[in-house]
Length: 272
Image 1 (cartoon, rainbow, N blue to C red):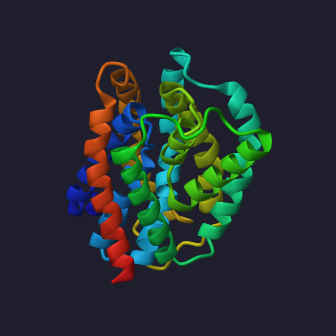
Image 2 (tube, helix red, strand yellow; image 1 turned 90 degrees about the vertical axis):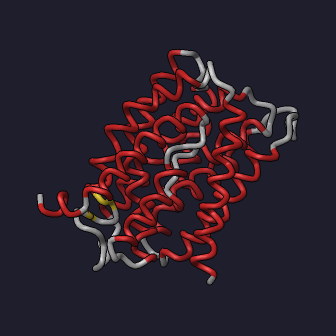
C-alpha cells in the first residue's frame, strides 16, 4: 500500500496510458503496445531502474496487457465483419513460430538492442503514417510462401519490441491492396496470437533482473498490468466504434508526429 501511495503519479500515468492505448488500438489499428512500451520505458527509469531493465520489463508487460485488449477489440471488429479468419488460419502457425523465436531472443539479449529496434520500427511506422501512398504497392497479397514469410517476420519483430501486431500487420496488408478496415480488424486477432505466447514465455522463461520494479515476475510487471488492462479493455471498443465515424487518417498523422519524436528520443538515448 505504501508503494501505491508513494507512486500515485506513476500509477495515474499508467491508467492514462491504458485509455490512450485502448482507443488507439481500436481506432487506428496501430496496436496499444506502440504507446505502452515507451511510456513504461520512461516511467520505470523514473523509478531508478536501469534503461536496459526498463526496456525488457516494458516489452514483456506491454505484451501481457495486449492479451485482454486484443480479445475485446476482436469482438468489436468481428461484429462488423472485419476479421479475416481464412487469412488467420494460414498465418497463425507462422506468426506463432516467429513469436516464440522473438520471445526467446528477448530473454537473452540486452535491453539496449530492443530499445534500438523499437526506436527504428516506431520511427519507420510514423513515417509510413505521415507519407503513406494512397495506392497500394502491390495488387494483391503474395502467394502462400510469401505470406508465410510475412507472418513469421510480423510475429518475430512484434514480440521483440512488445507490440501486438497492428503496427506491422496493418501496413503489410494495406501495401498489398487489402481493405483498410478489414486489415485493422484482422490485426487485432494477430495481436492475440502474438501477445499470449510471448507474454507467457517472458513470464515463465524470463529471469527477473535485480533492479526490476516492484511487482515484477519473470519480465512482466504485474503492477503495470493491473493498472493498464482495465482501461485498455474498456476503451478498445470505444476506439473501434469511433473508427467508422471519425477521419482516422488525420488523427493518425497527429499520432505519427508524436510517435516519431518518441522513437527518435529512444534512439538518442541508446546512441548517445
